[in-house]
Length: 63
Image (cartoon, rainbow, N blue to C red):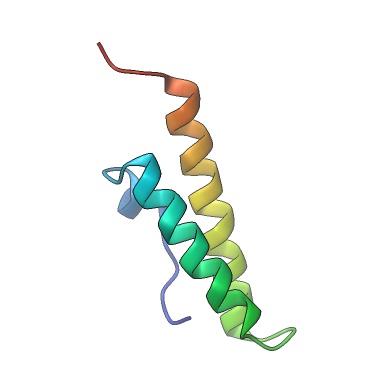
C-alpha cells in the first residue's frame, strides 16, 4: 500500500464506495509484513475509512 487515505479524501464517497475501499485495503493488509510501513499505512487507512463510514451512518439520511 502506497497511499494513506485521509478523511478529506473520503468525504465525498458513498457508504457503498467506502465499504468497497475498506475491503480492498483489508485485502492489501493481508499481503503486508508485520511491522512494515505498508502495514501501518493500511491499518491507518482502515481506521480512517471505518470512522468515515460510522460518521456517515450516524448522520442518517439527508432531507
